[in-house]
Image (cartoon, rainbow, N blue to C red; front, side, top):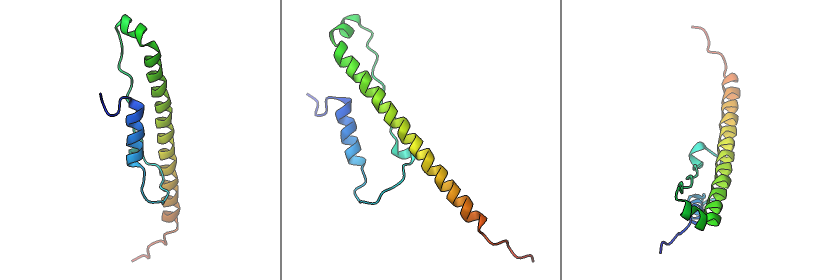
Length: 100
């Protein structure tokens, strides 16, 4: 019997292991965003019928994880855009170089 039988359990453990230990808040980066693993296709009709509820739960979990992934990417994009805008403002405040 595996220690972590479900994808959700593995995701929770991975999330807990990758959370920052210090209390400093950080902006999201694309490296913080882990894409979800899609459910494996089940083509056998008997298996699909027998495990319909479990397969449905796996797809529901995948769709939830996919939405969380897209929100993470959106947050990372917003963070990078804000950093670019800060850099542009800093660049614009540079004094022109003297001629000569």
